[in-house]
Length: 96
Image (tube, rainbow, N blue to C red):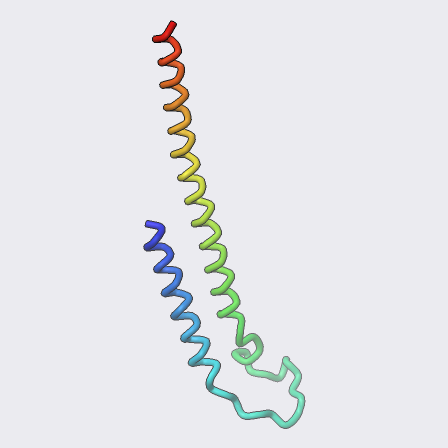
């Protein structure tokens, strides 16, 4: 399951990187003078916002998946420790 998740994350990053390269390769014509931001069309005001939001979303998803996997492994370890403790208590009782 972890390998699938890693594959999905890697494919997502690859697609995102390809989109950045394709969209970033188109150079807009150089402007001759300063234009205040309130005079720009809405799509030119924050061109990187969707990519930034995507990057943050991917990072948070990876963090939560990592914490979830640690929690699952910790539950397995706790179960094994309690089983070993139960076995050790049973061995001590049978010896006496």
